[in-house]
Length: 258
Image 1 (cartoon, rainbow, N blue to C red):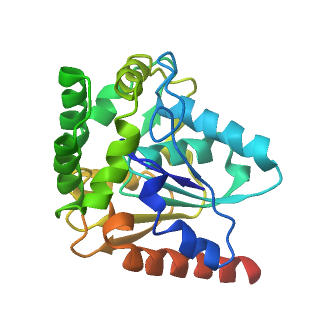
Image 2 (image 1 turned 120 degrees about the vertical axis):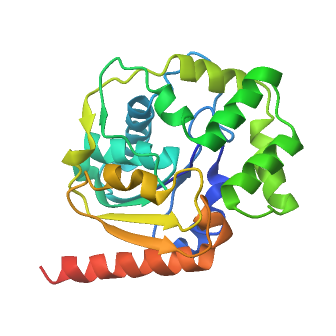
């Protein structure tokens, strides 16, 4: 189960999903509303917990018996952690890729400042609020900041297409205004096997700035990808897959030897 970050879509996993599938995994990537090609309703609750509940409901509607390896990037990392805390029996492992982690989520709390304090997200959201539309230049700038390198034209286009759809900017802002947490969740109660993957040159959610938050998780393994920015699964997919597949194989051996 693959969950993208703020401004992303299933495209974030374009280079990852086919390889995982070739290794025999059933792979599902989702577009978190209102991103990607998902619905653009302005009245949705855009909090971490509400989005976690929504995707957990999707999983149960698809197949309540299947247990998943869960992967979340940036904002999607926080959502994935929320999903695992809400329903730990549904998941086998958790891959947090440059996650925008929380320490705790409090019912009714407005959580948008937590997300928007990430420099790239704050800047991007400001452009949305100011101009109410998305341009190729905005996407170019956002990706260059996140990637730590110049994005390819195809990457810019694949981000631009869903973000420029009618109703997306309005829904992003209105969902943020309605972002109130439905349940109390504490990251210290996360007891799944956790792999954290970070880009060495991530300036959006730097590992050093997130280290104390990550250390609230009882047990985790950490992998740093040299020279990668905030989106290592897009810019360094081979190294990313090498580290993730090795982790899954080691997890499988430990499980089989119990």
